[in-house]
Amino acid sequence: MSPSNRVHSNMRCVLGLVTLLLTLVVFGPSTALASGMWSAPTAIESGGSFYSVSCSSATFCAALGGPGSGGNDAVTYNGTSWSAPTQINSETEILDSLSCPSATFCVAAAGGDYYANGAIHNGSVNALTYNGRSWSATTHVVGFFSPVSCSSATFCVAFGGPSDLQNTDALTYNGTSWSAPTQIIDGNGALGSVSCSSATFCVAIAFGVNIGNGASALTYNGTSWSPPTGIDDHLTDGRSIDSLSCPTATFCAAVDGSGNALTYNGTSWTAPTQIDSGNGLASVSCSSATFCVAVDEKGNALTYNGTSWSAPTKIHGVGGFRAVSCPSATFCGAAGFGGQGEITLTYTTATAGEASASVEIEKFKVTTSSLVVTIKTSRAGTVTITGPGLKKTTRTVAVGTRVMMVALTKAGKAERAGRKKIKLSVSLQTSIKTVSRSAEIKL
Image 1 (cartoon, helix red, strand yellow):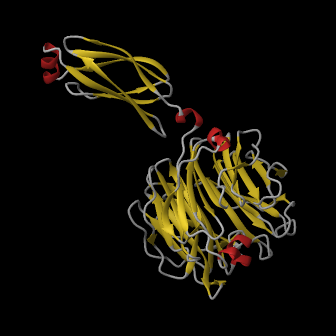
Image 2 (spheres, rainbow, N blue to C red; image 1 turned 90 degrees about the vertical axis):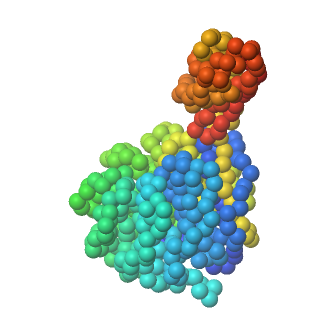
Image 3 (cartoon, rainbow, N blue to C red; image 1 turned 90 degrees about the horizontal axis):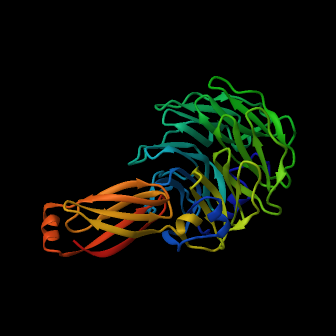
């Protein structure tokens, strides 16, 4: 199989033979990944297989897939749970590429393939957009259309061509319509991954250009694409650079199916470095030049700190991963699979520090018109103080001790005159979880 066949790799072939287990997971930064701090799974669809996931923040992700090997459903994540699957494409093609720069804009692309009679076939092509509420009708764009990357609701890049083996053209989206295809590599190659940090910077990966079956990179400056430059000739057994992530114009990371990683500094690429021996790296996502997560086909995750990659850590015990998306260093979403499974799963977890987040009521003092509370927090976040006879008070706090003054209501002042007891509640909300404490005090 040609290494250009990123989307339609050996993993895709497996989809036609067994029912896979989709796993959608969300997790914190490298400390959480290393410790494997996962919550219990929640089923969101029976018999599903999902191919991609894209998260714009800790409160929004979308994923594409569907029952069996269909791939025509979408689910969204709101920071707490995944929605029920919604069929967004009534045609037969598999939706396998997704990009969501915000919670109100996504583009989904179908690679022109569909599943029938136990095999994957080439078909027509679809592109759909999401506006935060619903998906648009299918737009037929070009013979083969995948993958896609959007830096905003008014700029996307996608690749197309007559087939997955002649995927030589680039198309752009301006918020309203797609441009005509422009050929950016010759017919001896095929375009694979693409990542755009802005409307004036994108990087593309191509195969079979300049270095035989190796991989080349091209950059886009807002007007034109550069010639391809060879970056990875270490690909074996039909493997490819399966994923690329460029959070800025001066940093990209890429991973290949042979377990290698490469980085780009705005000028040149590093040589491929083996970081996951024996496992095919399926996806990488970077929120900055100092935080990336890569996932592999065996259920492992690796993190990058700006200098080096961590060792692979098993975080999905049932199967492997297809995609990962990290909008920040404290949140990622991932899509995975497991042999013979019939349900889809979602996970949530806190970081190591947030898992032990605490708030304590150290002391309090009652005045004629207010309650003065001294609290101590172990994590930065939002503190809220409530109670009968108290005006609800909310403050953003750092780690440590803080004094908060809470005004008494008219009823609270009356209760104070009668020396009545009330229940005081103090909560601390971090980016992942909320903890609280309460105390009975005499007004």
